[in-house]
Length: 91
Image (cartoon, rainbow, N blue to C red; front, side, top):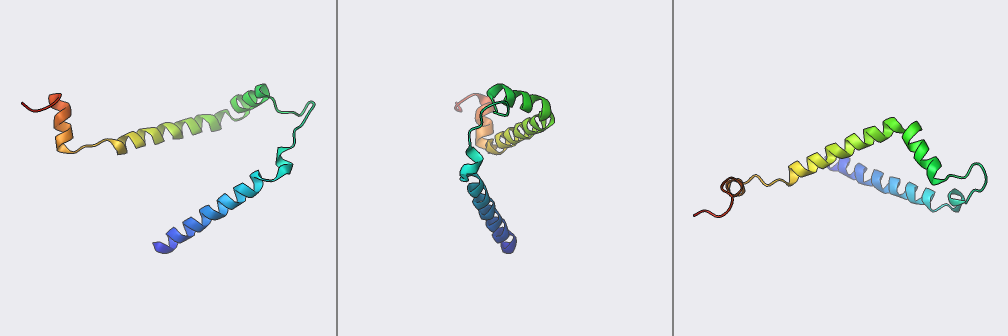
């Protein structure tokens, strides 16, 4: 189990290093002018037409993640459940 955790950590470090190398390359950030320049309208059209299924899948994953986070945060100890049922302090 420790070996798998170590490999996962090394993989994340390698992924981070690769992402940083790609993002820091100035060749990726050259401004374009003319017909091939990406505008806000072009980006929105691309995301909603060509990547529609990916956006729906991403939205579903994010919704499931939020529901899971809400479930994990919920405190189900008996004293807290009784507080919710009775509406406050015991008399």
